[in-house]
Image 1 (cartoon, rainbow, N blue to C red):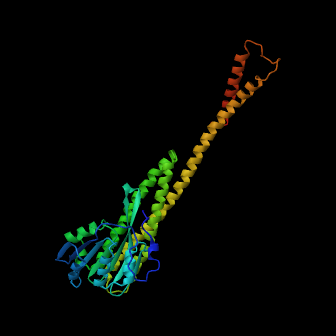
Image 2 (cartoon, helix red, strand yellow):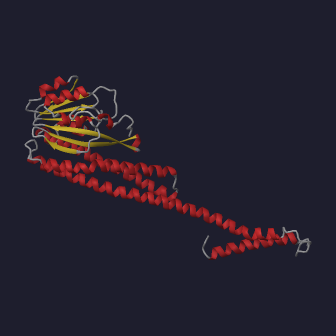
Image 3 (spheres, one colour):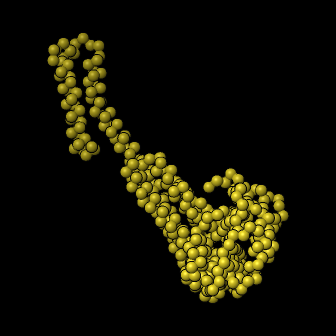
Length: 354
């Protein structure tokens, strides 16, 4: 994740409720899409001006307003004034370093979750903050950029499949959060497969590339853990919220999403432990490989010890030495050297050192 332009210090000293974007700087224009639906009605369109959303404010149908892009403060403030959103909430929406949370403001409920997707072929995670404002007949979602995991929910609304068209905005909120949680499972499956493949390579041939991949996977689990652990508090808070904005029938689905979140947490902890064990396996494999190398070097050095001894002994400048003037002296010394090496090899074999 690129955090070079992601400075929280730019908010230092500003008054509470001041809307200051904290996050990656983007040049694209903010995109606003509106889906308005009921059991028999459906309308979907992209609006070019915030004022076009005003007509949906008091409709009896369910309106989902999705905003892609938080860098245009003017757009966020206009939406806030139109739907009566507190300035402190708007401040949190444009600050992309929020911890997942849920706040009840009576007229609306504010939720923050983290949407995580794989990028670069599954090598890295893209962590994006998604904020929701749940009202009586509307749901507003704020995303950092275009692209999300909500397409299946959109298709169900368009095709009138499931109960989403007959339910209220609270069920829509559940559906979107459930889509985010389901995507966590997809990410975990991908990371699990990477760990399995990496385990075989780490044991057979540990390399620095394997170590870098292990470190990358472990970092991804840190991001997942930071996103998922607070999410269970959000879902628990939505279940317990004494608000007319959440129907009793939706509570059953929220409990199901809560159970899924607990499963994700368990899987994250299990795979994180596996990643830690993988690091230990790597260190052990490298140590074993080094031991094998040292073993070979030691055996070679040991085999040359008697050869070196005999060569140095007969290299001394004495006049009277056995075999010094014999025509068979040199061949005899070669045989002695060979026999000494073979004797050491047999000894090593007997001790099962080789």
